[in-house]
Image (cartoon, rainbow, N blue to C red):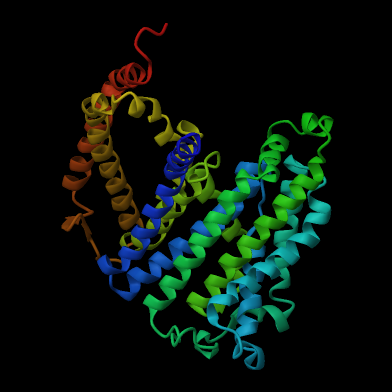
Length: 424
């Protein structure tokens, strides 16, 4: 009877941890049935690769407290290595394509072993500056060491030269999608398990109080080193998947812009939570791919969102969601619907109107001579007429004023929903 009770208790404790992974896998498997176009599959592939890279970066920033400004080089080197393997017919023709990301991970880990040997001696500003220097050094070498990086044109390959995997030659984008999903799930599970190991726990301890970790007998340097190497491995896997999906690597995959983008993704999602980089990668990829098709100023809006997140929600989008966990446990989320609607609805309308004013200004300054019309929300406006300026200005001012007016009531409702009854 005791054994049966223990088995039941063990199953009940495991199910809450396994269920989110099962739901995520089912969602990923169903997505191609909903979005069937090749462009949608390409966006989802990009999203999955960004998730892997962001989770790898979070092993440094969120779990180990190491701010890196050059982590894109590990993804890039892994991707370049995979492209060279694609072009090595004598070897690539003997291995199935799904195995290729492992080689990208090994090359990324190899570079991390070299750089981590001297960069992880210190954390904080010293580590950040070393990572910046190494990143810029390797990015500069990409136009010098042409034999490996291919110069400004980069290196291209062909994934179909690999050994067919159970008859699949990965000619179609849907086949590549399921390959990327496989490695996404494997990498995410392994990185999650890493965070639960003693090494992952010690990385948190070194992040919070390295002196105390040293006092307990743990080497802060070696803990940082192991986390750095593991992060380089998974970043290399993301690079290998990039090589498979796009079949070309260039200097853009190594430079500071790419490293800054993954830093933005991680902070936007929330570095303090494992699922934070996942949210950040999804939001950033959608903004980068979908919003960029609608406006040339998409980077301005992404930057404004990032600044607002850092200023008002330091925990990122994941932290914002977790603030509502107490209310959810007590069944009070419904109490927030009304106050939130009074603030978010006019706030969103006002923000969109403000964006329209920015778009009008940009069109007015940069449109060709004689081009006075532009389309906003499927409606044509004359930028030289005062009507759209007054209209969007009034909507922006009114919406933001209503949002500010309702903010105190929303804050009070949030406090009441998250405080237990009878608590002081």
